Image 1 (tube, rainbow, N blue to C red):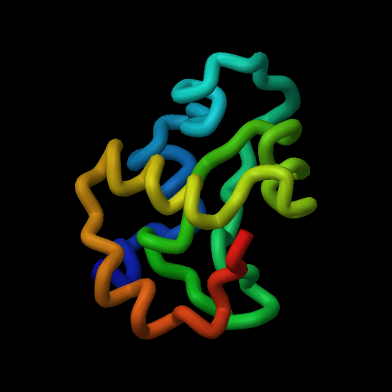
Image 2: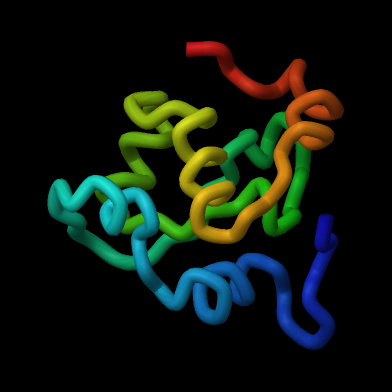
Length: 103
């Protein structure tokens, strides 16, 4: 699990380099994006302070709001990252299971 990228904070890295300002949820679902590019903490930052790639996904403003309001599940966002970046979430899910909402 990467904990940061040298000379660039992890939020900027995810938005600019890894995801390229693209809303990954919108790319998968093709349901219309709007607003700017925002990085979402899948497990809330206030709960865990977890600024690592595996917990961050770039979304448009519309989908970020939906994720914040739990209209998009954490599990679905993790699955999108697994598909795009081949992250292995088995250990991550075990370690942080208390913070993952079951929907």
